[in-house]
Amino acid sequence: MDAAILTIGNEVVSGDTENTNASWLGRRLEELGVKVVMSAAIPDELDRIVSFVRREAPGVDHLIVTGGLGGTPDDITREALAAAFDVPQELVPEVADDLRSRFTGNPDYVAHWAELPRGSRPLENPLGGAPGFQIENTWVLPGLPSEMKAMFDRYADELRAAQPIESWRRRYRTRESIISPALVEATARWPAVLVGSYPSFGDEGPEVEVVLKSSDLDALEAARTWLEAELDRLT
Image 1 (cartoon, one colour):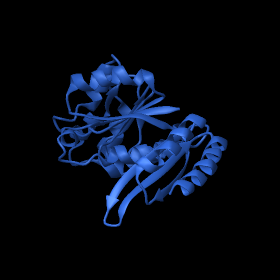
Image 2: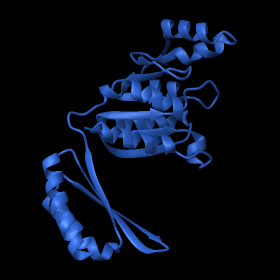
Image 3: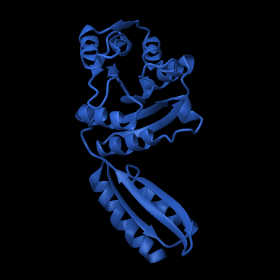
């Protein structure tokens, strides 16, 4: 099972705001056994959002979208997703009534949040106002990290794959050039295991973190046993 992550927001693309949502979602999806095959950020521009969703949603099991669900002029995610799936926006009466009852200071302003793409399923926002929604295989969540995390966790079991993705990682005080032959051989021997190496250079010299990941637990254990012994020999 795989997924793509789309973060929407001018502030993210410009670098004014760090894209912590994508990092968090990547980790959580992997915990659920879902492999993230793409993570992208695009501005609050309708044509770009529509193009991305139409192009990428059919190729994954889940498309997770965050951002653009507020009430300011640049919050166009509802409109863009409706256009992407070629459906109109419709006010969901029960969602609008709930919003008006909770936000009595400006009920007409928040009722706009209930104008969801036709055929979508509202997703409850445990920590905020604007609801998310699901349309086909696309899950649309708020951009505010606390609200996004709470909403994702509420529906996480519906995204869960049959097998979790497990990992093994270990740091070695060495250079990638020294251990690269072992990494290449492990990749060839166990194609179901993702082999990663991440170098860093600190005051105490070069270091490489080696990471193995797979939903095939037998293959992961076999790769770990062989690679750990081989890396100990090389380093």
